Image (cartoon, rainbow, N blue to C red; front, side, top):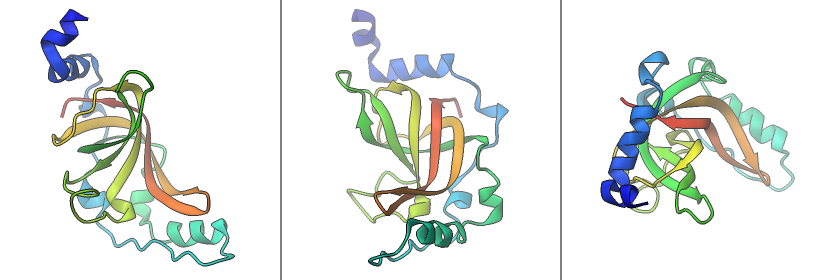
Length: 162
């Protein structure tokens, strides 16, 4: 415990990076590609089926972006924590965004301007600094209670060196 206190959060993140996988082994996917197309979230109308929303959303995703579905990629961006591990204060799930000023402090991002990331192992929160993560990218509409929540997810993500 004293070691963790001595080296602090940044030190633990650097140790984690040293133990992580190199980013050079998989393609890096940038925001110019992920957010480089106009995506308009379908309007929600009473009685509209989820299948209609999924079809309308899927039709807007370019084929070159859809081709990354199921592939390991490296993404970079800023962490906006959305789920913490109970009792530890560590981040288990977060939104990866291109700019730290989106969401609470600035403009609301479009659906193709964030990635929902679920970590293989929770880590300390590190906001306002560019981070790199490797994981399996899912490309396609994700619905929750009849609402489109995202079109990008990354599972089993780990922090990597640039």
